[in-house]
Image 1 (cartoon, rainbow, N blue to C red):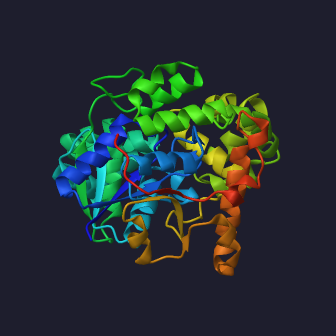
Image 2 (image 1 turned 90 degrees about the vertical axis):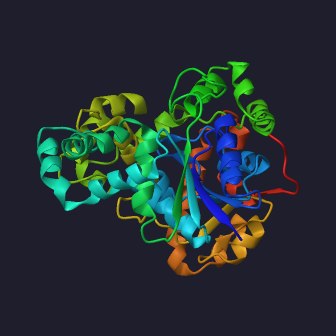
Length: 398
């Protein structure tokens, strides 16, 4: 069985994602089984997902994915390296031979060269010098790489390339091969549609603003699901809806309490603690804490991890596989899984005690996420125990 993995957020699933699925199958063969490791209710830029993870996974399955499993929470709220490491480990546990990803540069040899340079000993002196100058880690890394290999360093200017480099490093011990698909249409985070595609950030902005033109840039299955969620008050879920809950928790924490969630070597925890006491909203707190050295995404992820009780010591690698959606031959893939499989949340209590700490953390994260639902009737913490994966009986057309 030819199995190819994809690491994604699908926030929301759009025409570009559908193109990536179909192009991956075209290149590897029509019988290729597509397995997606997808972020759950929290996403890598340090935010709430626009819609519940089961709804987003269903969109992917309706448009061709054979299995959607949840990326570990710690990986979803990590840097590019942790995000890639957690996703690659999950896909390896499901028997994936390839890892397919979209990138601005589809030259895997160049991506691998950049990955080797980034992790090598030769870059450390230049990196240390850039960090001492007050640059953030990503900016310092790009500057240091630029001194040694300008072509490889240029890749870091594009977010999907940065993830591609992280994937190169993450799969070294898995035996997986890379398949880079050139990104089509609008650039990552582009505010406007382009070339027949719209970015996820553009679509989120339109959906949150009540601009119905978002529907033109998503598959029909996505349109149906998003429309139903909006109508029922299950979307959009926005972090600002939980400002009071977030600040109430964070203001109980001083710098010492924040240190398990933030580096202790650069004064980051102290800066966060001051900002938490001064800011009136989560966004204000982040703006007050942000500097050239402490980029916004790092701040947002760290504060969310503190809110969720998810210290940096939590591994990005999965301890179990949570199924969010199934289609096609996904069930066959699960039969060969190298980790415990969770299909129905209600069965979690029967799993070994060694897994219960992580499972309880997942449950808390879902319960806190539910508080952001527009419809108060959708905010129950108990709803997660009744959710089951979407099962596609027959592949839909996009």
